[in-house]
Image (cartoon, rainbow, N blue to C red):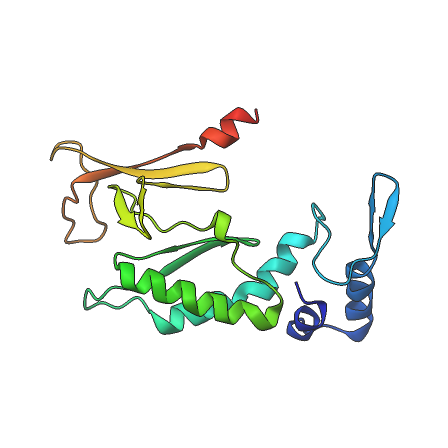
Length: 183
């Protein structure tokens, strides 16, 4: 996280901005060894999630501008985010790939990057072939596994609104195997 970029996005009295800058530069004590912090926010710091939200708000606005939700049933993208963890959801694989490229480019001047080991393109209902690998359905996000399962017409989920229709699957959200292993 680029401190100067972050501070440029915060509009507050200069005394508060000065305090925030000192907090960001305060350093970290790791196993008795002090290390300066020139970038990033204190891991586990109470203010870190709000600072990530401030810094990444432009990313959300970019995706909303590029792929807005429309009423004419065109594909669009949603970004769901908590602090620096996010998921991009769309029915269209091409839009997902374009979002990944757009976000990667947007993050560069901010001093951030997408971690390839934490990035997956998948479907929530079925396995897909992507990038030479078979990707299992569903994904983990914030300690939960989100996945859809096909069901019959009597147990199916429904779209919202007045003209509700059956969608042929149910969404299941449960603790991820990694979260369960840590308890």
